[in-house]
Amino acid sequence: MKVWIDQDLCTGDGLCEEIAPDVFVLLDDGLAYVREGDTIYAAAKGNPEGAAGVAKVPEGQEADTIESAEECPGECIFIEP
Ligand code: SF4
Image 1 (cartoon, rainbow, N blue to C red):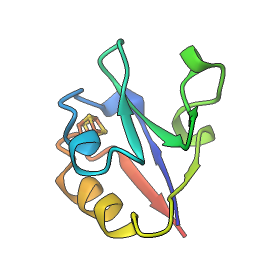
Image 2 (image 1 turned 30 degrees about the horizontal axis):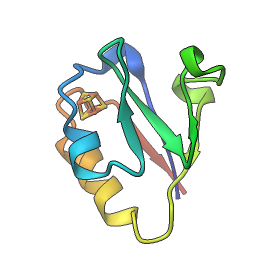
Image 3 (image 1 turned 45 degrees about the vertical axis):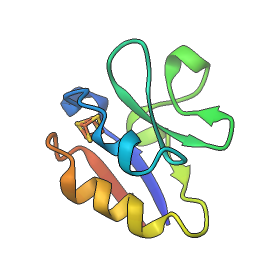
């Protein structure tokens, strides 16, 4: 399972990071990004973001990732197989 965030739609409430902190991280710009271990998919961290910044979901984090996408008020968390 893979996941990415459309930062244009992110409201910055941080719900995703609360539910699945191993998958999502809120940065100083007030937007959420996906992470893969120490790699954070954000331009500020030297990596592609948005649809180009796709992170692999760690084993065991699938359910929390799906819950985050369902709860996300911006409806901007996208899950791929
Ligand atoms: S739950 Fe959605 S809107 Fe809220 S911070 Fe995460 S990606 Fe952004």
